[in-house]
Length: 211
Length: 233
Image (cartoon, rainbow over all chains, first blue to last red):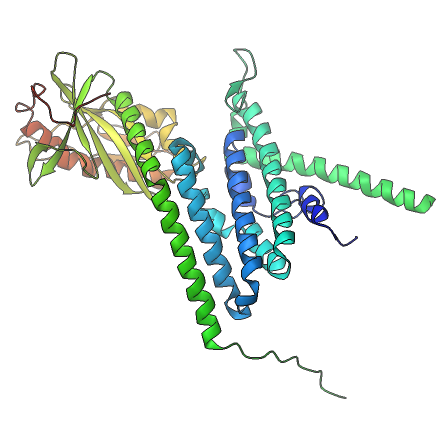
């Protein structure tokens, strides 16, 4: 596996190769809990991306001033502050949206993806690389949540972003908007992603053997 | 055999630890206060709009409302209460009911609700969750589960003979076990939240229903020159 060298590589790795949900299987709690509609999934993805980006930049900028022994408390303090700002921002945008996301906005603080990227990447790299990594991971996380949320909303409610997709009489799969539907949708997407990855690896191996 | 070399790290000074933790803590506090100040007006506006919409849903027959507070056992018109209560008047200015705000601890955090009290039916006839952080898909069923929502078609809150308290305390029972009109049919899988709603309504109704009935005649007709608290719903 080659080591990423450019900012573009740092950004792209989060989209597919190291996708936080489908490959690293991080942040499963919000990924399954609030992906019952595409709008909830998109909002949660964007909120998490913002916190990832801002905390990554802050941790990278302050890394020299944070002693190793105090790093976790400092990272959590930084992350919690940005989560609080997101919480207020969503309340200012729409109370309905805030209510539908429940406690999961506050729980972004303990999303292992954010603390993991702060500790493993942002604290050891420049602000530029930290921003590229956070943006890539954020976009990958949002895309994964959105793909789960779209499947669940289409099957479970017959709508997409609240737009009716099917004629009257469509029998909705209510189970898909319930918590168990999150597991079903996640399992199907993991099957698809793993099948594609295996196919890519096989093709790469055959190409290597041929050359 | 030689002992493995142990890497020694220079000890971190207490000052640098304090500097990092206190400095970052202060910066974070400033950030939160700044964002709070910047969004407070907009959030208040959203809350007022949500309250207005909820009032229209729980008291659909009311064409105007009057905000009142419990001032040491007296019912007086006043706006700005933390838990506002509104008297609802029809188009002829007759008192038809009240919309009461209640609050209590749910599974995750406080739940704030608005419910309608009908003088004619002596029952709670409408219910709306104003604020909740209950688990999506579980606790938030209190707003959508048909059999739970059906509790609020006519939830009995008759007063006892001397009018000092409810004749029967509101209580949440297990799903499908409702026997009496003052019981709330609970939700399996959201037990704590549905029981919390029963407790919130009981606590609030025990305070407000006797008080509203004591002042029912005084506020039977909409005041001629209502204070600035009047608003369309």
